[in-house]
Length: 172
Image 1 (cartoon, rainbow, N blue to C red):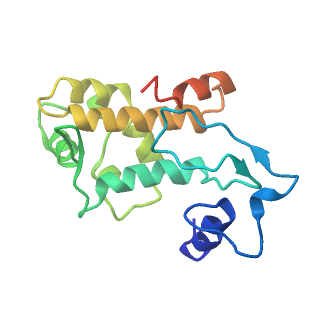
Image 2 (cartoon, helix red, strand yellow):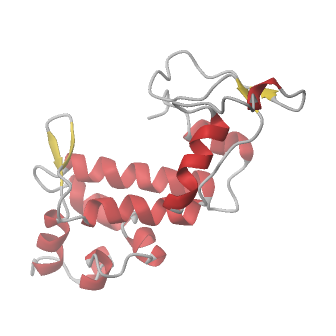
């Protein structure tokens, strides 16, 4: 979302703030939401007048761009998540582009809205290479979550039931 809209979105959703003269959640049009009790990380009031969503393509490219960030240090437990593993795969003479499908532009932070690169990062061929490479488990899991986001929110063949299943923490 555009940063200038974030304060308004925060107030309208009741996220860490409220409008003193406008009780958004007390309108008859407000709807009830029940969040799973084990989703302690997810904040959303039980009554909402409206919701804000990010388009899925933007979400996917943001996920990729976070990995490409020079300042981000990502890890999953004690597993490192790093773009360096992909640099190594691309530069490694053991693998050809036919093996992994990647090019240097796919992992170049300059190309921020490159959705096709996100698809390449979630290929089964790349997953197989990462799975066979030492110390890449965190990066592999990061890309598997990216693939779940793509399947759940972008692929048109995914049913609502399948999408809901992919989005539950029980599955992850």
